[in-house]
Length: 185
Image (tube, rainbow, N blue to C red; front, side):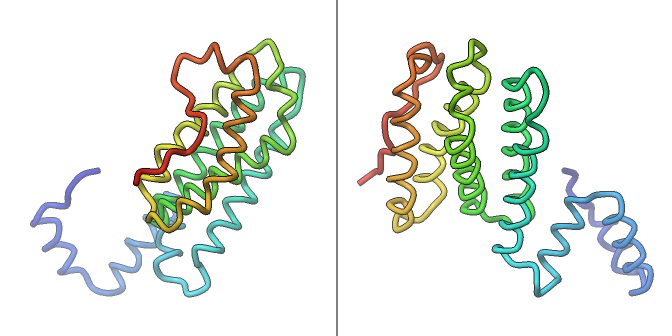
C-alpha cells in the first residue's frame, strides 16, 4: 500500500467537509473491505461479535452452497480456501488476530463435523488443506494470543490433530504436522 505523501496530506487538509465526505463515500462504494472497515470503526452496532457472526455465516454458506457437484473434493478445497480468505479479511477489518483464529477454528469444526468422509478420497487436496490449517493454528495461537487464552484452544485443536494423525494420509504430508498444540513455558 502506498504511503501518503506530505503534499497529499496537505491537499486533503484543504478539502472542505463536504468534499471529504464525497471522497470517502466514493472510495467505500468501490471497495467492500474498506466499507466494512469504516463500518466497524464508525458504527456503534458493528462489534467484534457481529463481524464474527457475519463471517461465520459466510463460511457456513461457502461449505453448504459451494460444495456441490461431481467433484466434491475440489469444491471442498475451494470452499476451504475461500473460508481462510474470509477469516483473513475479518482480521484485516477488525485488526483482531483472535477473530481470525476463532473463524479458523469454526472452519475446522465445520469440516470435522460434516466432511471427514472426504479425507478418505483418493484426492489429497482437501486433507492437505485441512492439515495445513491445523498446523498453521498451532503456530498462530502461541504467537498471536495472550498466554491466558492458549488453554482455551488446546483441547479442541489437539482433538483435530489427533484425528488428522489417525488417517493414513498424514504420513504422506510434505510438512510436519504437530501431534498437539505445544505451549511455550
